[in-house]
Length: 359
Image (spheres, helix red, strand yellow):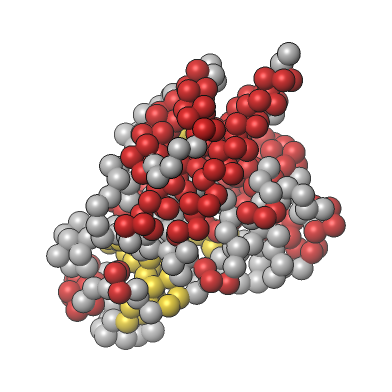
């Protein structure tokens, strides 16, 4: 789900809970990152709710990005910066735009947790899906680049890239429902009836089969860095939950934006033509054309929508729980808790509508 607001743009002083001594890091970079020159300056990005992310500047004016695991008690399998580094390194060899990966460090004595360093892409992060900073006639091209990049990702030969063991082929949605359901229960702070219903209904209505591709896992506008003036993607970022998965699950996650209401960052209720924005149907058709896939069956598509709304509720609950114990990196992570129930309710409404349509 897209997040709006200037509070996510740019950098800030490093939060107290995420501070570390920069000297051990400077020594590490001098040894592991070609061309690095001391001294090292460290700032923290405002955006990002999972892994604390920093902009580093060296003595020669070069910039880098550091992503680390947050401090504190973490949910099982979460914050896998080693997986992020591995997939970015592999994709650096393809036409999928990704920042150059420089170094991975799993020695927690350097900054307190495992981290990796990658290229700093000097471009735009577009937080608002309405694209108010982009001229109306140019907005469609931004979304075109977004869907073209997704088609490129789903076309990569993950076996040839050495990622055959990056996940398990097949049954992706079933495993995702199980995984996120468990993490939801581990971070549950209140009873939500729609979530309990979805936890029962979704596993009982799984698709008969699924294709396997490399998926990003959180593919949305604000996890992309665009060229400063052109509708060109410089880099897709935040690969923490990437894996081998189902292309329809990822496409429907992207298109969930068109189903969610404007009061929590979605496109539902907006006059898309007046804004110069594409429709959900246009995005799906373009993806299917680029990837040579058939248009999905309507009932199957609605299942994927309900699944993704459930999944985002689980993710938001985890962010909210971390805000309560002080480990979430985003300064407004606590607001995620307010959107857990609405997303779950919307997912359950889709299920009820599907049941009504089938009668």
